[in-house]
Image 1 (cartoon, rainbow, N blue to C red):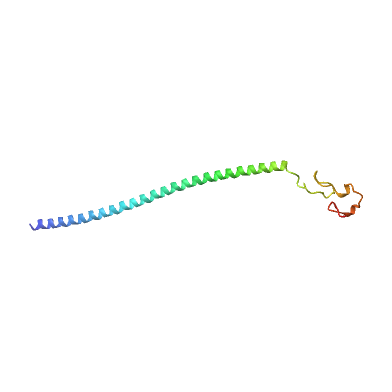
Image 2: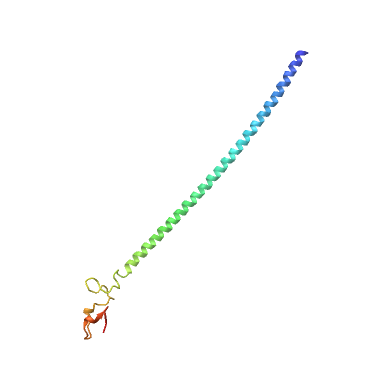
Length: 133
């Protein structure tokens, strides 16, 4: 009977210890599950952020491509307009009445006073092509 009592006491102690260990195991499993959920949430947030960054990069690359094409188009139009202007524009010295050689630089220029007919007055009395007397 005494031996039976000792075995029952040992059994009860072992059962209580087992319950304590099982409770500790459940707490650890709960902590592990929470940690896994937190890490999975962080991983999902990182994946979402990566997807958003890729979308942004794709959109920015497209915008750069469009702006580059727009700039190249504008440059081509400007270059074309410059060529057209150069083809149809007046010479650079247009409007200058005399060149350094004393001859007319363009068709619309005023001839030098020495080549114009005088009206009997002395040629030395002219200033800027007009009579001063």
